[in-house]
Image 1 (cartoon, helix red, strand yellow):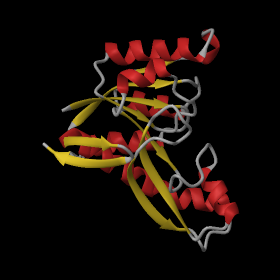
Image 2: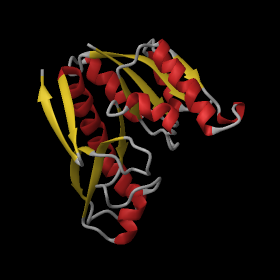
Image 3: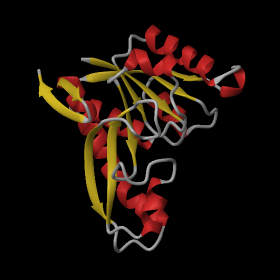
Length: 202
């Protein structure tokens, strides 16, 4: 069983998908803590409903991003977290937090990386006019959505009429893809060789 720490900034729908995966026996693990940088994040209510401890860590209470991330590391360590999941966490991670969780911190992105990185992946894909987009789960590194790719799911978006429609179409695939990757983490390990990522079941 793995202990999971989730970082979220918003409504927490990917957070919920992990909760559901655990409840349904797909993920052999437990969520030890939710950490959010927003007092009004919807993820907090989801944590409360499921008996998961939640902690708000506000950027304004720290002199630097590095100081904030050092505090988050302390909280993850206190909760003996094995895997850190960024579920709509809208901040770049500094080395203070990144290094201790190298290849143990993952993120979900609503586009097929390396295309359309950043905070508006679905919108950028729509405006570019691509016919196929999707979602990517990747390891977190020091760049903007540049870490080694773990898993991707392709989604046709050629009939979508707006960026919002693209995002809505991709979202359930985000949930399923993230859940599958976390389930794999709970039953084996991902090996990183250069840019390649390979899975080995225990």
